[in-house]
Amino acid sequence: MLSYQHIYHAGNLADVQKHALLCAMLDYMGQKPKPMSYLETHSGRGLYDLEAPEAVKTGEAEAGIGIAEDWFDVDHPFRRALKAVRDGFGEQAYGGSPLLAAQLLRAGDKMHLAELHPREGDALEDAMVMFDAKIHRRDGFEMAQAVCPPTPRRGLLLIDPSYELKTDYDLIPKQIAKLHRKWNVGVIALWYPILKDQTHLQMLTALEFQNLPKTLRHEVRFPAAREGHRMIGSGMFIVNAPYGLHDEAKRLSKLFST
Image (cartoon, rainbow, N blue to C red; front, side):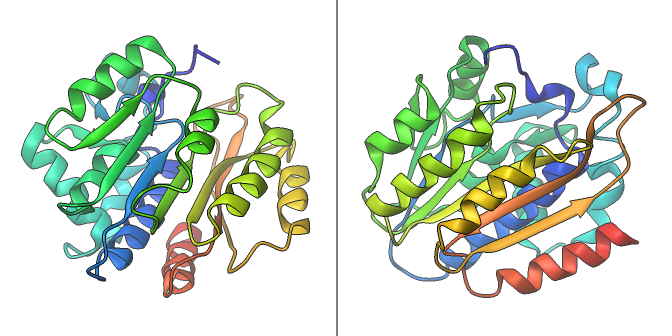
């Protein structure tokens, strides 16, 4: 609900997978001259300090982007976006999805970012002040349903909840089905954790039952961040996956398996 703060987990291996695929999609979509919209349901604060006590305490960034950055060439869109964030905010800065996306969007593209947590929302507004982004201080699914289909109609929606509420697993397939009916050309990207109890499987079964177009399901596994930690992997389920994304997903799978 309102207790989750991503600073404890920013830059972890789940972020590496999610942000690599996100940046690859936005980079490809940006190669066409038509404008696009970027929407995000659970934006967080947008900018993270990897030297903050919360990040140092868990060590997830050190075991994440700290070792994985060299997986990406300097011209990879994720590496380029991360460099732009560091150039603007310092070497220990890590961009959340909104700030990384902003580095790859162009003049004329539109951003709609939702964040319900009061402090995270304040920080998000500060992080995005230099960008043309509409910040919605409301439930992310409500925002997405209200905005879709967006203008410009071409675009991408990232759904990245904390899954603090177990009902999210039942709610999300219904939300995606409704959003796709409204916005059948939109790329809808869902991130989900892979937990030891395999909580995500029923949600994915419901999504696959809908026969959504051009779907990509990509999952990676990694050791638990610490003893007792339940997350052992990260997944992305993408509707209307852009051309070439399967190749990037395969490349990531090999990197995570080494």
